[in-house]
Length: 258
Image (cartoon, rainbow, N blue to C red; front, side):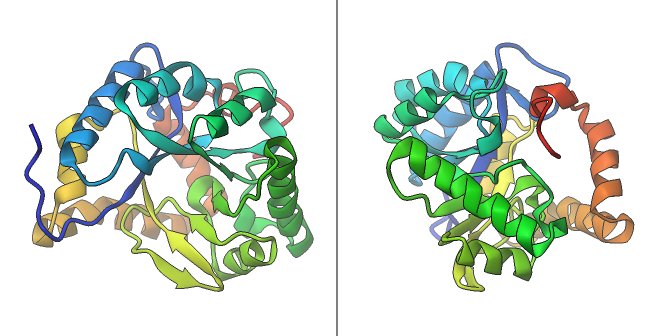
């Protein structure tokens, strides 16, 4: 049955990180059952989510082991954003797996080289993060890479200009309410990051909310943005890490730079 959707519904991007076999205390590990329920609902919305509107960040092996079979079963194609210095590391996608994703009709984008705070990088380091990751993916895949998602969602005008200089044309952020727009020579697009607390009804509500309902949904994000502005990115990240119950080793290989 197709869900009722407002005629002016916005087509937003959503993103996942790790997929788990079972429920997890880590808020960014969505269970396989939960992901399947989300995909079935998205397909029912009939808004085009089966065609590269679902994204995955980091390049965790669970994207291949658990998410990919579900995508095939339900007819979805996604964008996988890969942190290139992690390719082939423990619990990360290999070069062969990244190539296979592309051959199966999925899109591949960069998630930087080392998953650094790009807005805190020097100009030289920023250029290296962006260019090295793009070149690595192009060498692995044999095709051009023009899309990137920003680690931690930390970006500013300088980061956007650097993305343009490094050869990207589309930049994905972690702002779920950001309307698609052209800035500093690139197209900037927002995404909703899915936590394991988001059930099917909540996700549908987010994707179809309008007016005052939408404004109420925006308030928590605005409050987090205000907190981050007050305490700074590093302190905010430490606070987030505690409340998110993130296991550092599950997200970052031992040689990675956060």
